[in-house]
Image (tube, rainbow, N blue to C red; front, side, top):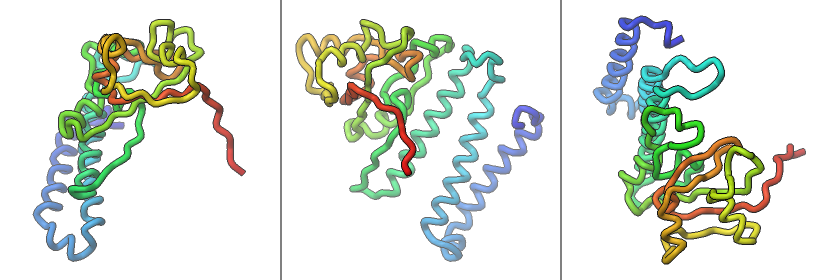
Length: 227
């Protein structure tokens, strides 16, 4: 639907969202008195999210009919992860100076890396994951925990992959602190490696840059519906 809008209509939408945000800010005291701090904050942030979505639509190309990624699709990925990071920082700010957030997302979002390799090799430019923005904002106060598991795909997680190396440790599940690595392991973890993604593709990452620690699951079981 957004693609059917003319340039004039898109500009009108952009101005309208900005004007609404201005109304929120100019009338903050009255709106707080008529509702609550939480209601005001969430309503305003929903408007910010609408602006983020409009910005994402602006850079989103027409999808490939066969589902393949196109060279210019990196713009949409970049906009999405930047917006995700902004929303995390907004939530963290609401928690106060001693607040903490435990955030669950895909490796490809939490990592302090750019999406490269696998299906993302089609991109004209590797987009920054959410973790890149969060690391820039939070520094070492951010702990990035990635995950790995054996893969059965012939197209990902091959003999030279992080997943294969961790599977070779011989323990079913374990956590490895990449920050504490030294010697040969540290050198290996500081080189570009392959990490399996969704059983069908891979990310090309430098493990010690992408994550602070990795959690390995040696055995995965299918989900079951609870009674």
